[in-house]
Image 1: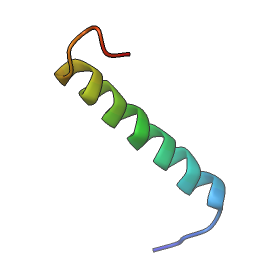
Image 2 (image 1 turned 90 degrees about the vertical axis):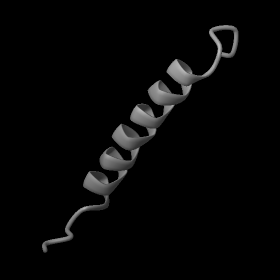
Image 3 (image 1 turned 90 degrees about the horizontal axis):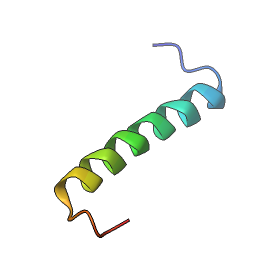
Image 4 (image 1 turned 60 degrees about the vertical axis):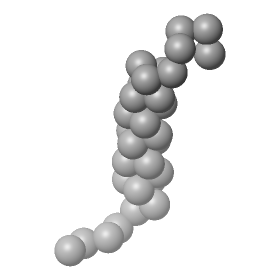
Length: 33
């Protein structure tokens, strides 16, 4: 496995964070923003 730039890791973390955020927003009540 080639672990090169930190940028890729950061972007992956951002994507994962966004996915978790969407799941949370869908599971939580609509009033919570």
